[in-house]
Structure formats: C-alpha cells, structure tokens
Amino acid sequence: MKIVMVFIFLIFSLEAKDYTQDKEVKQFIKTLVKEYKMDKDRLYTLFSDVEVYKSPLRLFRPHPKKKRTPQEIKRLKELYPLHGAWDRYSRFKVNPSRVKQGVAFIKKHQKVFDTVEKRFGVPKEYIAAIIGIETVYGGNVGSYLVFDNLTTLAFEKNRRNKFFKYELKNFIRLAQKDKFDIRSVKGSYAGAIGLGQFMPSNYDAYGVDYDGDGRIILHQPEDAIASVANYFKKNGWRTGELVATRVKYKGNRFHAYKTGYDKTYNRKQLKGIKPEKKWDYQDKVRLIKLDRKAYDELWYGAKNFFVITRYNHSGHYAMSVHQLAVKIKKKLDEN
Image (tube, rainbow, N blue to C red):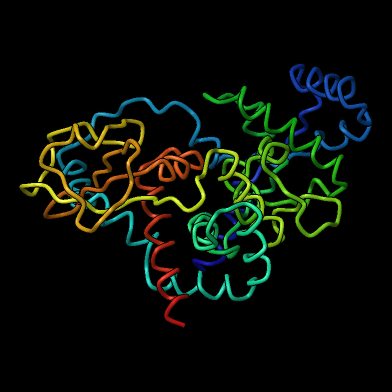
C-alpha cells in the first residue's frame, strides 16, 4: 500500500505545461530563430509540453526566514553540531569505496587517462577525483530531463532566472550543433550534464571531442576525462606543482589568520605555522581550515588548489578532490 501511495504521489507531483502561451517564452523563441536560424515550429513543439520540475525550483526560490521552535533548534543541533563540519562532509566524499571505484575507473580507461595527462599536464588522479565527487564515476549523472528542468528554472520565478535562460539557450544551441535528441538528456537539479557535470555554457569553453566522433558528449568517458583536464588547464593548472599540504600550529582551534581559498599569504607572514612534511613551494599560499569535531585541521593550499575551486567555489569541495586524488594515487602506486 505504501509503495502504491508513493507512486500516486509521484504521478500527481508532476505537471506538464504549455510554455508557448508565455510572452517571455515567445520572445525567447524569436531570439533563437533570429540568432541561430532555428526551426520556429520545432521550438514551439518543444515548449508546448514541458514537465515542470518543482523540487529544483524550490531550491532557487528565496526562502523567508522562519522562526524555529526550541524543539526544532535542539534537533538541528543534534544533526549539525557546532563542530565537525569537515567530518560530516568528507565521510560521503572521501571514503574507501570511492577510492576503490576511482582506481577501477582509471584502470578501465587507462589509455585515455595516460594520453590526456600527457596532453594537458593534469594528473589522472585529479581528473578521476573530480568525476568521482561529481557523479561517482558516472553512476549518478542526474535524473532530471535537462530541457524541461532548464525551462522550468528559466521561466518560473526564482532568484536565478537570467542565469538559467542563458544556460537553456546554450543547451538548445548545443543540441542543434551536435545533433542529439534534446528531450533525452538527463542531468542534475541545476542542469549540469555528464560525468563531469558541465553546465551547457561550459561546452564551448572547455568541452573536448576526444574520441573524434565530431561531437562533445560528456556522458562518454573519453570526452568527459579530456574536458575535465582542459577545464583545469584553462583555469591555470601548473603541471608538476603541488596542491596542498597539512600544517602545524599551536592549540586545537585556529583563529590567528583569515582562512579560505580566496585569501593568499606569503609564507613568511604566517608566524607559528609550519608544514608537517618538507614542502618546497615558494609561491603564495592559502590557509584552509577544516573544522573537525575535536580540533581544526589546517592546510596550505597552493595555486593548483585554487584551480580546483574554479570547478566548485568551495574549500571543502577542493579539499575533498585533493584528498581523494591522493588516496587514489597511493592505491595505484601500490598495485
């Protein structure tokens, strides 16, 4: 009975909508026809029957501040204690299962990784780590129809309408250029596509047709692996340079200097901080603080660490990529 009720709920939570009655969509179609010589009738057919995705839409709508009850506050503190944010985050991102899968993924596509690493100068373990963090090596590329989802986010009121209109335009243009079925592609809640979760606008800037079929298909490992490497290279990856190293300081909690990927220091400025191991890196560094349950873990982040944050603007994200990559490389070297 419970399964039946869930199934019924899913059916009625979906809503088809004819967007061709919307003035804004009509203008959008007119622009596509004018700029890219697209088929007007085909576009009207596409926009006449769109599934409205309400769940992603809720994520991009403003959330009014809610006064919480004492019981709710207590429950939130139980779920999210004052300390231990990194422990909770890394538990799901950097674990033995994901390391094992990363090693298997590299071995399965060894020739591609070897040639891509040589061409772009980005170590294979960092490319694999991105794909591992983003989609569990292609195991979870997203379940939302990209066209329907981007249309929902572009034309249903939310705080990022302009951004999603831009991405929708790029996705439609991409479908025309690479000749794929626009209604069959699935992606994330935000419209990201493929093993590396590229937004449509990133295809031209970073996408690579590495298998030589004349199309950039990021659900294909060859194109995805090369495109992630190209993303790093074009954002300033320095071949052969270090990424990050653990450092020591006095005490359990660190407050001496501002931390974060966007703040740089000359190492001479940082009194009372030393790398745990020899670290021959002379450029400016970032201080990355990882809040653990009993103490703050502190790291130096190099320029390549900052490059990883261009993929996702989060210090935790970049550190999870780094630590996963290090563990993958260690396992590869042992085999």
